[in-house]
Picture (cartoon, rainbow, N blue to C red):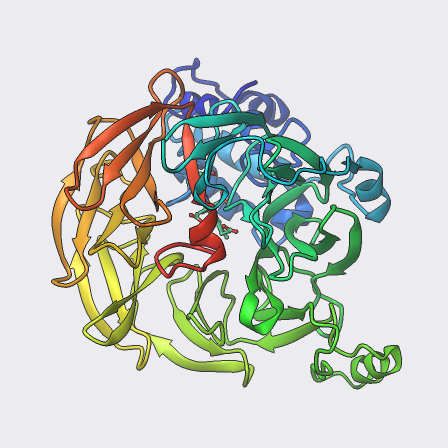
Length: 514
Ligand code: DHE
């Protein structure tokens, strides 16, 4: 199977320079391996009028020529001729041969499930709360790793290009993944096997599992839906993301579980709104500014349950961070503004002084000198911003070697780890922040020249794992001793990307994503 590598090779001009061929031929040669032969999306997003509606041909041409910062979209300048950019852009705005459709019938028809084995305990000896699942993008596998012995218990095949964090059931036995081509899979970490799968869309973003374990919500770019499944991946409800008047649709950027609120919070890509969808049967009515909504909800007798409450914003925010109470959402827009939204009052309550493009989604929380702070990287500026969560002021901007991407810490560690995986200069080194002095005190660079990124701690915070994101045989996980900062073990893997510890996620450690 061709991969992102094929795109990069094409971008680097390893294939012969193509000049003024038919756009369809150019697409098949340079774009299809990432965006799919049918333009329905694979590792890259769908490229169809339905998903590109906000972009005009010159803007699309510019993205093809220059690439997109902080994504895996490379620049094709030097590979394609100037006239090819415009021709391809115009061609991409034409309808696809096969119209993209994925409704409830398709979803139901794609579902396969088997009852989990009746086990009293896991079939392995590892601590089930200290397991890691590791997404290996090289050959599309999920590795299950014993977080005490650092041994691989199983490698389970997944669908193409799992993206974003897999999410655990509240008891930690099951893990759910979403792949970019719309497949959701459920794996049993006790029996070490897949137990269910369903395709919920053509181009999916991520998923969230409700804190009570009853629902799995999946955000789709295409179609423009939030799909709510039950724990066995049966569809329960499909919500199309529309404006209040129903006239404008939006791609759904991401969905998060706001456990203390018993709701999903949903980011939209094309509308200045966020949604809150309660999974509490006794949720208060959703007034939402719509009289008929309210009356209908009252008539149904379950006024707020699985019903979107729309929160109006001043701008489109699609990268989110939640404060520990989940009452406040910190959101960033693509054009570099950041705001605090109070979900209880349903509006923005503060602006954040964060120039550039803060990567709030990868932020972490930690305590320092009696204050609760959050730290976020910035996709445009080489700084780590540290913000006081009580009054939103910026405590420090810690200079980094280049723009940071992921940041991680743990309650039991004095350090936070910041990678620079999207930069040329710093992609092979992880910088270590002393959370007390707010100074960078070390850079870990075990394999110079190879991307080294995405840290996750063990349950006790004593060790951390980080990826050498290279295909086999060069890819690996390194185990870091978080007291001495020594690299103590190398575990070979095939382009490992993210890794996720069961207990840290379920116990909502402030040092990691949830
Ligand atoms: Fe991600 C999480 C969006 C590109 C690896 N990424 C997320 C989440 C979102 C997001 C909204 C949070 C969802 C969650 O965890 O439930 N990612 C985006 C983009 O918009 C972007 C920039 C463009 C795109 O292609 O979609 C993007 N992401 C990438 C990559 O190129 C990465 C490095 C490699 C890949 O897998 O495609 C990548 N994203 C990740 C990882 C997480 C993630 C490893 C989970 C982080 C975590 O620790 O929780």
